[in-house]
Length: 157
Image (cartoon, rainbow, N blue to C red; front, side, top):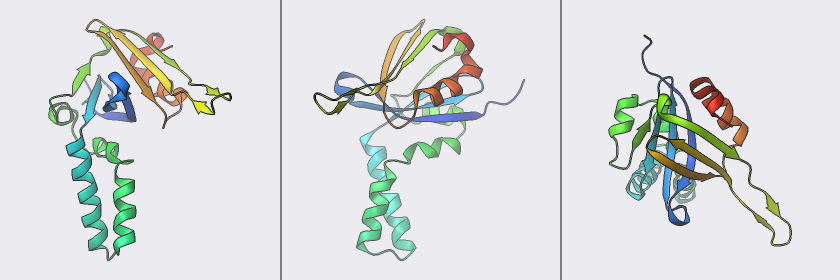
């Protein structure tokens, strides 16, 4: 048996009423881990980025730029963390084992020219524990399919 490794991270999955819960889906060679990105974590990451920019001699604009970019890269931390530590990082984190997954349906959003509005991409995971619905914009649906297929096979549609 091989040790568990992080294979990839899918950032900025939104769930819940009006997408108020944010997650990063960490894909390992053995399971899916959903890491909730809390406001507290975002604030800590922004402060860390500002402090790092200040140590590098950045001025006010440099610190502001670092703080703006911090939120976009918070998911990168999961490439360095052991999977079990990711799962235990926050009370909102949970896992789904591949044998419990019934299907994963991923769909492209679409652009409505009448309202100049882009609907987000969607992912629905049906598993023995229920159904989880997510919206996402920062990653192409095909990239998610490519990442999930080695673990879940034909369950990914």
